[in-house]
Length: 207
Image (cartoon, rainbow, N blue to C red; front, side, top):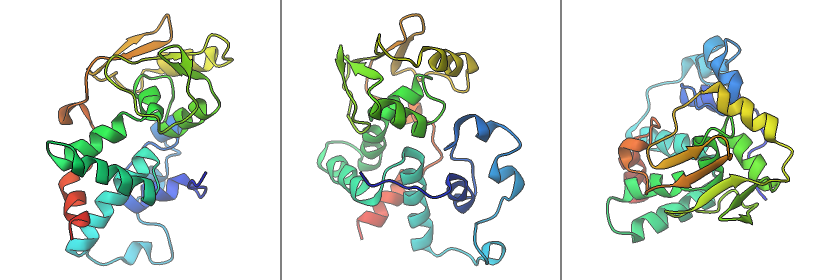
């Protein structure tokens, strides 16, 4: 399974903003953006102005890095979004939001999407009573995402939920006692609070 294995903080510095890739660390003064808020590399402080293509590329890279998706898979999501009815950019973000690792993070069970991906891959969650260990699994309206009864992550889940780092979006219902979340509806654009201009991504792929 291909995945990014280099330093995560370099990604935030390259985009010039916090992407919250390292969970609790991102909320402390140890965050790389707090210490070195400029692109990584030898010429990070002297980079010139971006072209129109560069701006579009940065938006695509930002979305990929926020959701932890590599290029081939991201392009596949775009093709699915383009084939659906509605606004392509919003369809793309909706598909990314419905990934199981993202839902686990949105429910507050994981401090970051990266941690959510690891939890799912290790088989700690079930959907509608069946174990699912595929982070890219797309949930549907009415699906119930729950920590498995045999999981050893109870204390970790409690710590993440009690930390309250983010509000559970309206399209999800959370039962903290049962360690369970239910997908109430499909996420709308207003529910997806990420700093990405999705129309620029559509323009980039439409060239």
